[in-house]
Length: 148
Image 1 (cartoon, rainbow, N blue to C red):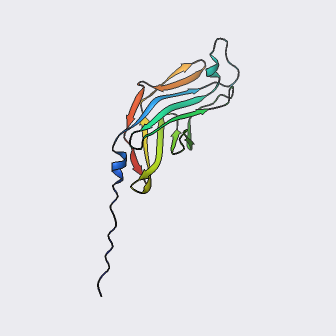
Image 2 (tube, rainbow, N blue to C red):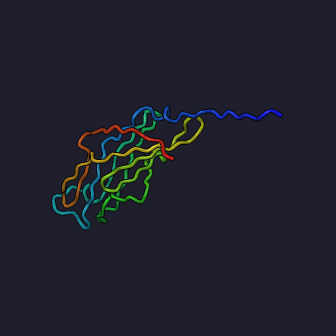
Image 3 (cartoon, helix red, strand yellow):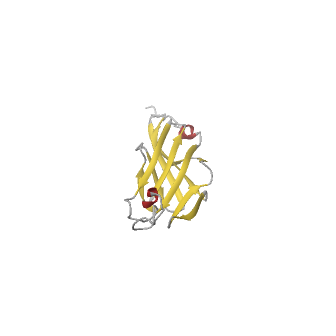
């Protein structure tokens, strides 16, 4: 009897994330609760988070926007929930200091999830009774890593 030998194809998922992702225009605003103070632009009546995600590996480009109800106040930090971007294959989580973005996409016949984070690149200032945070530069290149 001859032994059976199985040859399993090698899948190099690192080739699917060979180029860095870009996080563009990251900005948050944590609004105070209640009505606007006189002279405050209406935009600052609601807490919001926004950025643009670009993945040249999969030609994915999507807006990521979350806005709380006007007058509700509150923080955009929510480390226990993943929020979808306009392209549902991209999700993010923000804990007030670290933004973690994950992207699920096909790679060599498999679906993989890669993630990247920006940490320490966010600067916050008090504005209109709330707190506005943004990146000092318009675009941050991040190196994705394959998860699980």
